[in-house]
Image (cartoon, rainbow, N blue to C red; front, side):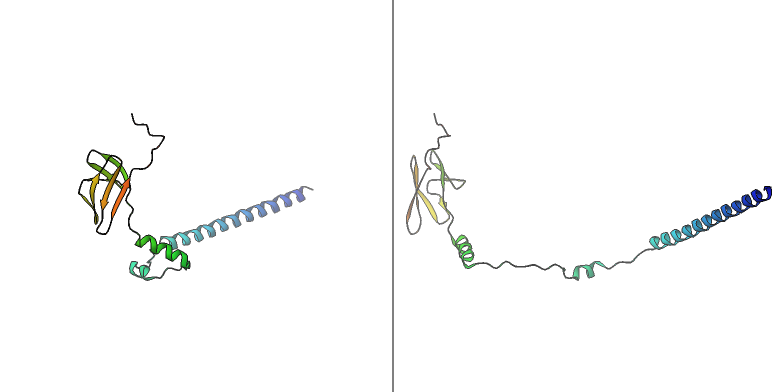
Length: 144
């Protein structure tokens, strides 16, 4: 019985020693493998030069939306329409038209201011006269 216990204990010691040996071999193998990986990563890589990158065509496809005839006509009207003049304020002999202050007889493009009254301005263009009036009263603004 003693011999059996002794043989079994020797057998387990051998198995345990072999397992440790295999683990050491596996660790050494992994260490070598990782060292090779790190060496490959550490190597300087030469990339492509900037001119070559800039010469590459973009891989994306652009889809152009077809314009309807109505949209084209609307856009053409916006381009060719004359700017609108809006009388915003009158103060002494000065008027604010479309966000800018003007004096009597001063030009606004091809037009000229010919008269300034309390609530309207007369502007003369080369072909016709225009009367710009102040907007209707705003109930939110109170003048005392």
